[in-house]
Length: 265
Image 1 (cartoon, rainbow, N blue to C red):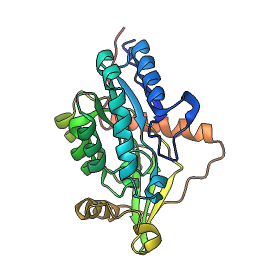
Image 2 (image 1 turned 180 degrees about the vertical axis):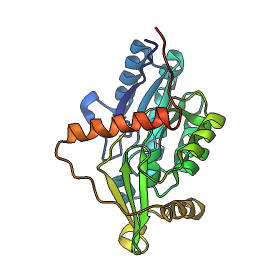
Image 3 (image 1 turned 90 degrees about the horizontal axis):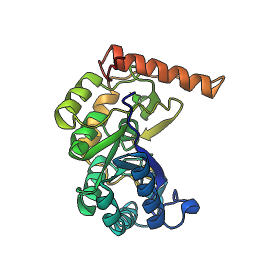
Image 4 (image 1 turned 90 degrees about the vertical axis):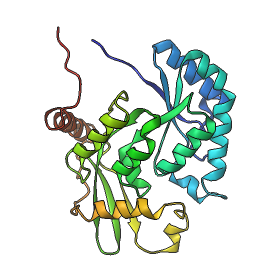
């Protein structure tokens, strides 16, 4: 049917609160993921460092980034011999685009790339378009969804949505995608019930986000100015709700944006 599989796993950073020892130490976990990817014919291993909770640990994200780089370097020979890239995601409000780019460049872009997540970009107070511009040279896979942003006067709310229900300019986004990373697959990851609140002021929040660059935050605020308040979706059945959101997202991506390949018998 012309389908391709991209293998993936969870967190690979041993110092992150998100790391689980289910598959052993971080190095062994990543080696296993590489073997799995090779077995199923994947040229990438999707993974992530941690989450926004790591921002609250001593030293913030920097020690975790250094630990992630160290783990990647330990498996460099296995990855390069298998012809597989370790594709690290901007995940759950952890690294910004420029931080993930820095990590990739320090680890080695010949065997480390990016899993770009447009929804997670808004959780690090970034415009998804700006996030793409920064990460594009290293993007090898993705997790794409829309986000509604709006300012209630005290802060900005980010609410993930189905494609077309948010504030992201997808025509601009995929025009840049076609120019900057045309060989990377567009993979929908629709998770519509989650949101994040970003207060305009407050040490309790902002002490953990001092690494956010003003230019990136200004783009985030400009996007929020275009949004409208929305209620959190009422979910009678999570499974039915998510299937419906995914179906609408596929329809929007195909019919409005012209994405996807068309296979013939």
